[in-house]
Image (cartoon, rainbow, N blue to C red; front, side, top):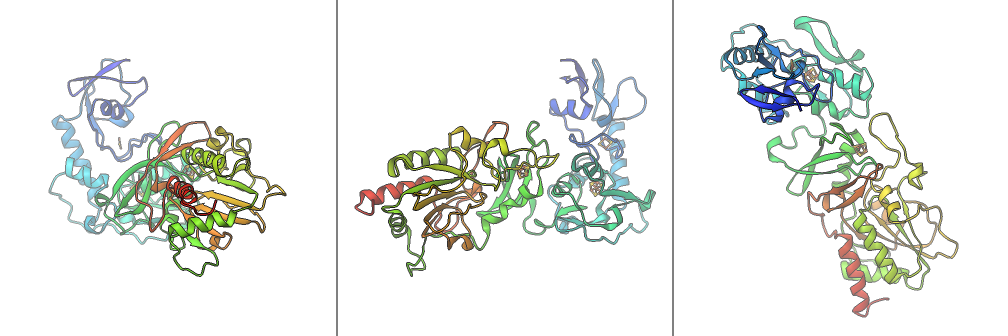
Length: 472
Ligand code: SF4
Ligand code: SF4
Ligand code: FES
């Protein structure tokens, strides 16, 4: 690899890499606003000032490619002075909003002001203010805080594929807005909040729910479709508050879609069944032992099929396969999840960005285990045992006796003789296989609510209830 020298250190860089990335490799952070590794380089904020030996003027590190033998200074006096001036310029119109701003604690403007700004400013004129129109359900706009970095405009143009954010007017009157003040249209709008380096674009869903420094973070994978975007769940006290994208160059780069971002909401849905349910038992809360016995009774003497949601993990599906062999020998197993998607050959891109047609995460894992797609129940079938992790869409099964194990909502409960509630993707560990055959780990962030149990525990209770002399 070629090398350059940054702050006296020999740094290897990839050909074509800019000085921000090369410095990062050596653990040297160059402050940026307009630069984002997933977007084109425009070099307009001037925050990434560096000195390059042999060039008189200060250079912008984001638009300067590292070159063999190049000598760069990121901490010289001229560099510090340049950054301080940029900060002073950017803050002349910025309100002193931090205490009431949702970006506080994860704001590049705040961090760079603290790290590179000055405690004084010379501006005495009145600050510029805007009236903000509503941008739709995802993003809250506050243009008084905008520094005109244009990341949002470039995201719309280059990633979302829709020119909906624009800079209107010029100079001091520049305003970032949607065309004609229309609401945002992209299905990827949440990314606007992620990339905005200030509190100008924030997520309506997360606003004022938690301070950024109060949440714990769990690195896991989105279960919203067969792409398996890498995400971080932010949670506190057993409640998930938001989902953010996690960089993975070969799967989702820096982005996630809104469906995946807000998928977490069902975890805390009031209608989620979180205690065992036995239909017609008359008992509001039958408790686990009675519910497991009732579930076994409901299928006693029946010709049973097992339906597995393609949102289950590999480990869960393997356990169910073993369980089926022990308790329902010869029973047919099939997977379900997205109407019209019976096998991996039906899956494909749902748009030009990330979304896939399969709305469950482990369709490809199910096929790896040899479980075929569900079409219809066989004529002889008189009972079904349905496993579902939260996303798979329930198929039709007519009037046969049904027992459900997994994640269900109250309106679905009426279809089952017994329901044994289990954990969502955020409440368990496990493996899922994405459309490209990449195995990834779901990581438990929060405990399951109420009386929910892991599927492994439920199957063990089922087995033990037989041994204890219960139904067979
Ligand atoms: S709204 Fe945010 S991302 Fe867009 S230009 Fe302003 S500061 Fe940059
Ligand atoms: S594209 Fe699929 S995996 Fe990625 S965030 Fe959206 S729903 Fe989740
Ligand atoms: S980050 Fe380089 S000019 Fe904005």
